Image (cartoon, rainbow, N blue to C red; front, top):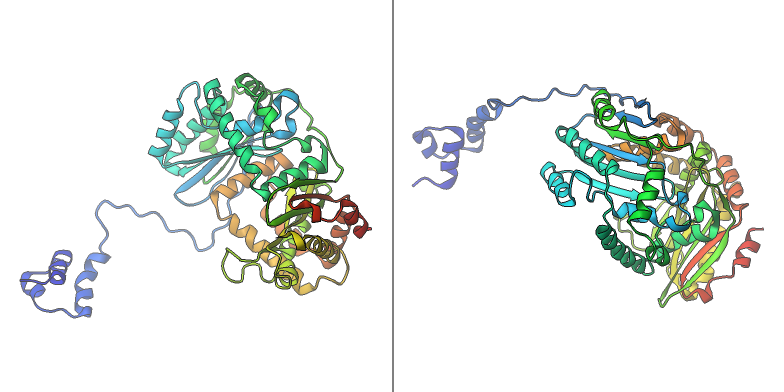
Length: 486
């Protein structure tokens, strides 16, 4: 009886009974199989090889007569991502529409005039597509990620969900129940809760509008309020259709056919906001106390060079948790890791963060520590921010490492087709164009130690905003923070 290996060789390599019956050496077996591995499979068309030097495709932008912009960057590969980016968010809410953006995010890809929610889910499963929706204070995003072969169907579904939502009252009521659960869970998520509080107390005007719908808003919102907000804000002139991995003319042909009759809205000025600073304290039963201390980033994303310096400073300061979930060594060269986490073992987490908008933003430090150490931890946070603003405190080696790390992170993120589509859409809404990546990389390369200190001093000259959660009685008074910074 032939052993199993001999039978496999006989079957795969096409050996005769006599050759298969005798024992073959490894070299003989490979030689016998080599011919079949080198022969192309019949009927299989191989794709052409990529050239040795492949430059990034340009971003092509076309504006339709109704003001809707179509922007693409063709990327090689089997998959693509398309998305609608809307100049709408919680800053456009007021009175009865407070919290609607939160509900619009939850109502995405539900029933439309042409499809039920079940039909949409079934079509997505058949195509293996991945959809998502997210609401922020200034923009809303609806995206579809799938194989290029399914792009026509993906675009048609995405347009149907964007242009023809029904907002059925029974579905609205279901989402309101889930939204209430989300609001309740927010109280148990200190980091997310405090980032929301920073805006509520740090700004007056539009940026102070809650992104997470408050309880009183959830009791008021219904299908008619959502419909009204949607029709007022989701107009063609405030929408960008962005895609990565899609031929521009191909997408434009579909967009012109399906989107040219989307109504154009009346010109609307972006609602104003004023940074004021402030203090918010939420008492909770916990062994740990969480504090977020922030300052204004004047000018926001529209001050491109300052925004680039801020991004490098965040990498420079870095930080993280006392246990690095990203693997050994993650962030160990950052200032907050070396100067705080390695030195003060009672600190559970200590990291720099930013929340930046078009014309303003917040930059600061988020920390978690036992309540007995929180006063000391806040004082350390202030000292670390002051150190970055002090000439001579940051070394050239630290700055160069931060610049290299930031550049590396940006380039690695842009390897993702989803990130590329999002970058195109968000830049068009913020800047009106897509600035080339080389422009931002050049800005980073040109940053000096003086730039870092000057920007940090300008930031620390604004009023602080502080939000805390836990045993807040031991958090230093707001006035103490202000005095330390004088």
